[in-house]
Amino acid sequence: MTTSVTISEVGPRDGLQSVDRVMATEAKKAWIKALAEAGVSEIEVGSFVPPKLLPQMADTAEIVAFAKTIPGLDVVALVPNLKGAERAIACGVDKMSIPFSMSETHSINNVRKDHPAMIAEIKAIADLVAQQPEGQRPYFEVGLSTAFGCTIEGPVPDDQIVRLAEAAMEAGVAEVGLSDTTGYANPAQVTRLVRKVKAAIGSDKLNTLHLHNTRGLGLANVMAGLAEGISTFDSSLGGLGGCPFAPGASGNIVTEDLVFMLEAMGIDTGIDLTKLLKVRDIVAEALPGEPLYGFTPDAGLPLGFKGIAA
Ligand code: ZN
Image (cartoon, rainbow, N blue to C red; front, side, top):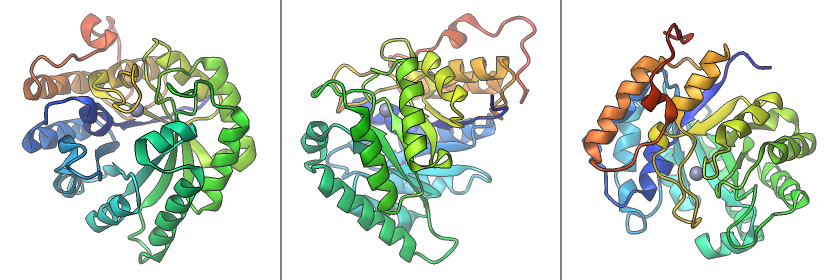
């Protein structure tokens, strides 16, 4: 099993977009800075969606500019389409990710694009990335969303996911990730799907899992992913938020619990858990009354626990 893992904190994007209130820009900056100081090396800081659609993300350009001043931090943004990608590239993001729903009904409902139209959009973005001068090309990744099931269609056939992952790679993306948008995934399914997709597109082209804890299986699914060589896991501080486009889906896996599990197992996350736990205060203060989840924050660290980074 792997000895180190990257935790990609998605709270400022996935978390905040499902909170009705808009977090103040200064609070977002303080949060991101504190995360980085705790050792978080990759943060999805926002989404380049039209502000009319998601006012919570209206300051993404300013947040990216701020995050880029933090040394060593990989700054990720979500882009829904070519227009969003143009803005993300102009802001100099290190990495951008587009959600590609494996359920065609979900895709049509949310972004009014069927699968061929999404592949065309992904190709247009990949071409745009390729046209950028060397050294200024963001890493472009596709998140295969609703890969473990859809609230409208139910199960999505594995073969369909494999076929669409291949199509995304052919369109020119750097890699794909699997997203459990709806919190339907179970560990056996994670094992099976990761194996199938890796076998089809190359084992180094699927490195990331985006998991939710909707049914309490988030960390069990992480274990299944680890065993298949997954090296990056998305999570959200305090399990903030969920997916506004998937009714019933709530809460990314909790970063604090994920860090605790991995560090306790001797897997290096680079994150100082004691520092990370204090970051919650910033979010709690900026969004009073907003539920923050996590077992480790409630229970505290076990006596004698020493994280690798601590
Ligand atoms: Zn999510």
